[in-house]
Length: 151
Image 1 (tube, rainbow, N blue to C red):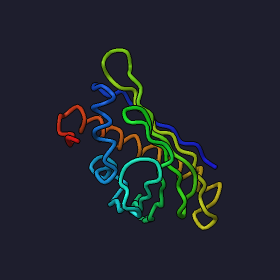
Image 2: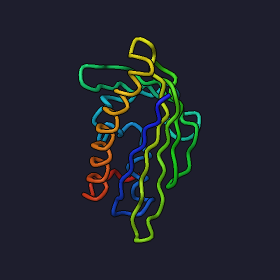
Image 3: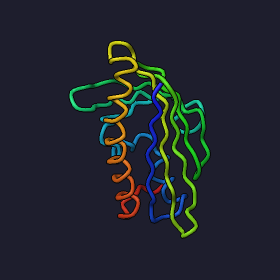
Image 4: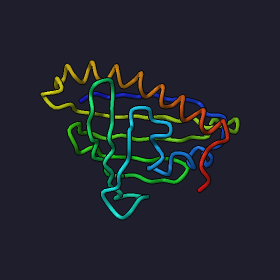
């Protein structure tokens, strides 16, 4: 299993950042590897929500099956990955003491043998760090640019 962690400081309070993170269907607005989000449940918010996220990293395309396992508005969103790539992930939002938000994204992922298994996790993990850092820059720009969707 490969642990991947990225973080960024955003100049907006956690509730403003949450307004962008909370609508899961809008994640492709700031996640460059997420092509589309489809819900596998009628529920679209909170613990138990299931999604199918079509992802693309370079030439690799997958559908990421996820279930929301943690939902703390303004503070955290956790997921379990149950598709081709398995594992867990979590967004955490913490006040930074200056009116902004410290946003972290942590994942523990397992790749199947045909994606290289442990070697794929090592190489893929390095690629995902770069992709997710770019995603967090997109999130920061969306929040700080004032174009965040109102809830």
